[in-house]
Length: 307
Image 1: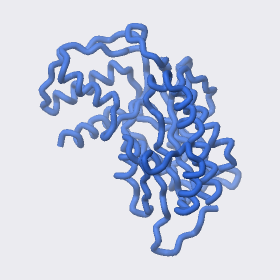
Image 2 (image 1 turned 90 degrees about the vertical axis):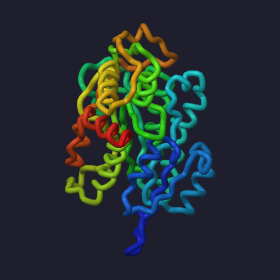
Image 3 (image 1 turned 30 degrees about the horizontal axis):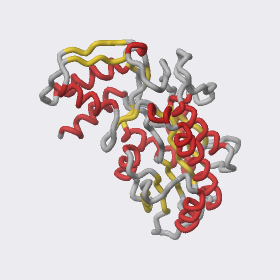
Image 4 (image 1 turned 120 degrees about the horizontal axis):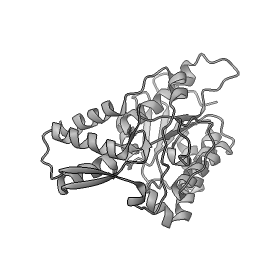
C-alpha cells in the first residue's frame, strides 16, 4: 500500500522526463493536491537503476509519472540499443523502484506497438506486432513494467501527440505552411490526433479512479488503457484542418496547395502502421469521462497558441 500522509501534507509526485513536450504539460497541469518533483534527463537518468532507487527511496513518492522517452521514431532505427535501453529497460527500473515504496506508476506508451493490419479500433487486449524499433522498444517497456512485480500501474497508450514545448506534426505543418507553396502529405495512414493537455488530464483522472472506485473486489482499476482524441483522420486531413485554422487566426501563409500522397511516396527509416485508431471505451467506462473530438482539441490548441 502507498504511504499515508499527515493531514495537510501533500503526497509527493515524481515526474521524469520533465523537459519534454509531455513532461512540460504535466508540470503545468499537475493538481495542487500533489507535491510535484519534476526531473529532467539531466536530473535523473531512468536507465541508471542505482540513481533511480536512491532518489525514490529518499523522496518516497506516492506517484511516479514517466514522461522520459527516446521518442524520435526514425532516429530509433539507427540507435536500436539506446531506444531499447531508454524505452524498454527504463520503465522496468522505475516500476521496481515504485514497488519498493508502494508508489503508483503512470507510463505512456504508443499506438506503434500495433502493426496497423486491423480495421477496427484497437482495444487493449489486441495482439501487438510493432513494425519499428521505436514500437518494439515501447512494447518492451510495457512488458518490463508488467514483469516487475508492481501491481499498481497505469500504462497509457496514445497516438499522434502534439502540444507546446516540443517538435510535433502540428508545429511542423505551421512552419511549412509559412515557408512553402505546396505541401505533400501522406493520406493512407489513419490515426487519432491527441493534445498533450487532454492526455495529462486523462492520466490524473485514472489516478483518481482507485480513490473513488466502486468496482467490485475482483476488479482492478489498474492496468493498460488507450487514450487518444475522439474521431480519426489521415495525416493529410489533419494537415488540411491545421492550415484552415491558421487562416482563421489570420496567419500569413505561403501555402497554396496541399496534395495527398501515399506512404510509398514518402519513405522514412521507420515503418508506420497504416491504421492505428485506438478504442478508448475502457478508459471512458472506468473514468466516466468524455473525450474531446480531435478537431475541438486542435481548435483549443490554436486558441491558446495564438491568443
